[in-house]
Image (cartoon, rainbow, N blue to C red; front, top):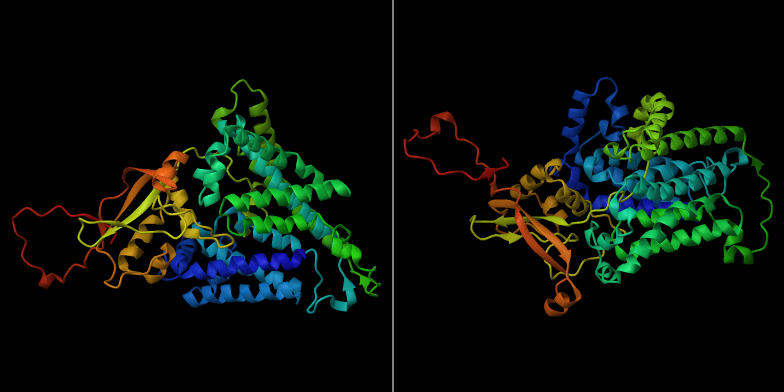
Length: 518
């Protein structure tokens, strides 16, 4: 069950990315991968492929991107069918790592790293087999190293998610008010988010404390025997179901449920209990079982160091006490005894994104800015492009996207929080003005039949859910306020004519030009 569900997650992840890869990182996408690899090669001294591990170093045109996505889909189907599971998982790990590196900012989400780490741990579960249930030389692997790696990964995911919220010293988590903001400030809310947001304030505070208990206390039941472990699995499943019901997080929640399966055994499933005991298959135990355990211990050790690093660097430096009390002591001890000797090692394993730290919403956003893309043919009348999933028209019902991961819509949320750090906005607007169909499809619109617009600008709005009274009166889900414009009108500059064809310069004053992305 665990392996087949993991195959399903890979199928969703590769399939979702395949629909978007042209607009994101192809030669005509927002961040083309081939020029980016050339810049990495020019900057990095030595083996650049170790700092950016991707098969696209060998072949980086658009066909290679589609090939990797297609291979990922086929291998995911093979894992779901139980065919050559080890080798298919290995190919999936290499393929998704290659695409994650090539995806640059669009594939730097925590669930991309979680998928790679889960796949790495799952390799410890299965034999080197080409057919279901058949190992090389008739040897069956000891699954315990893989099971424990997956359980530790689930513990790390849940515990770090709670610990970083408290260590960040964010006031909304400390006073229990975080969920009063969460449902309308999260990246892609659902219609259900509006209704949950309007529950009484005490329910949000109770939910905040309950969530912290789930993330900080329940994970320790993962290592408990018998029914306690099943209780942890049931709590985590219910927790993930509530997240799915109130927000769009791609395949993240399904992947978390896959990790929860590692807490079960055959006896925990009703269907399995009804089956007669399986007959011995006569296979010999795996040769050199110590090798799997040794590799698992190495992975666990690195995972521990990465987790400590994540916790240490979550503590705001400016909040640590100057009188050498617990804050600086913890920081000094962690950095001096744990982090510094392993810093170089962690620097080398980080590009492979397979042993990572986690922690969503460590600081709760308490406002919701949104970037609106407006286009015009004459520079006077403007219309707003309607993204498929991110908030736009206040009257439009928030849409369901799960398990699809709309990466441009998600990045627009981050860009609105820190526009100057979103360097990809400039090539994004340029591709829209150039009329690149793949980028227009990412937005959710077809290129106008009359051609691309002549002008484009980025407007800045503040959004908030409507009240019950406002919704009864207007039917709108959002109310928004225009805060200003991030850019003036942008347009593609026409290429300069040859020198011999240029007209003589006149002495009359020139008209002030608009902004340009050319």
